[in-house]
Length: 358
Image (tube, rainbow, N blue to C red):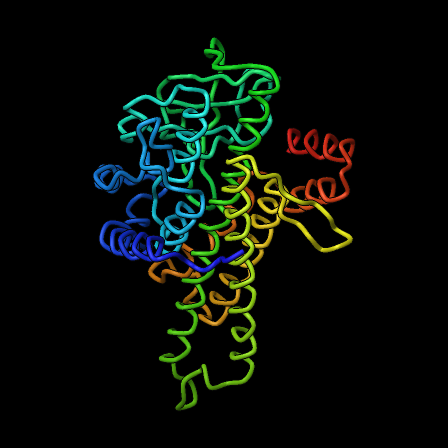
């Protein structure tokens, strides 16, 4: 298993890093608040082919792997891009598996989104892109259903994400049975993986912001970064962030293997875990922790300025917490992961019920 970037992935990283630097970033994120969507940046992103890049070539896409998409998501997170890219890419891939990914979804002309939480009857609550997506996919019992309707009313939230409740009454059935359940479960695991990558990007940039600030902020005639107490707050963050990054990369690697029929291993006693579902959950939890700790520490070393709107770190601080809780309370996600690792269907079922009540 080699988790280093390939030459092609390094090119993808450089291209999209330049794009997000040019078209997004903290100032564009501010301008997009409170709705969390920059339509001009989305129009420019469509020109790159990113909305459909993860769809197989046979279905009209570019055939990018999940590992390739992780590279893009990490760069988007580092610039807190106000774009529904993760949800759209995952939904496009899901639609392709059931033969329903049309040209508008591939191009991004139609913004597609995924319902990641359990349904409340015919209502999907707190849909990640519910206030910008007009085409949504959800799992209702054992039916994979789609609704094509105007975006919902934006739900005010701490992270300024495009959240909304959506009504699935009269939704069209795409497929049903075990195939539908498996397809949706995999899509949510891909969503976990790419959201983890976004959080890794947020954590990485939060550390950069903190280090740059303490290098230039002076007190008592010297940079505050020279004080040992400040150094202690930042010194262990690279290890935490790198660990989350490697775990996310491993989850993507496992996801790509499972997509071609290579079954993962789930042997906790031997510390041998290559199962995609388990690694996706691990990555989301680890990256969420890394992002919340990194943004907290960075905001802390900014002092009172960290809470000021004109400083960028507060944008990263809020976005990290919003994304970390988007699927569910991380504590419940940990219990769900525990059920997977112990192969405990009853525990997993209970965790899913709790998530629906959250």
